[in-house]
Length: 76
Image 1 (cartoon, one colour):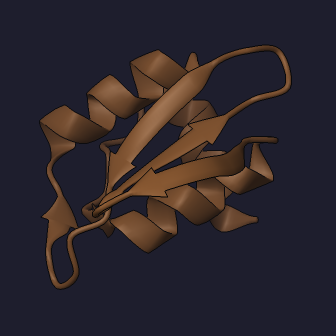
Image 2 (cartoon, rainbow, N blue to C red):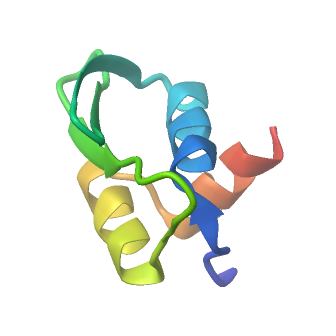
């Protein structure tokens, strides 16, 4: 299983969009994305800050994606 890279919010949001998620709203610095099957993920978009690995694991759990699937989305 590959180690999760350090990413910023824009990179995470782009990968989730590739997986079929769409931005449904943004409140302040938090972007909410929803998949057509009902999965909902919130990604904090704080400029100049990276998303920690623990938070990234939580986002992947909410998105129901494995590390391998997510890393493959990053390469697309």
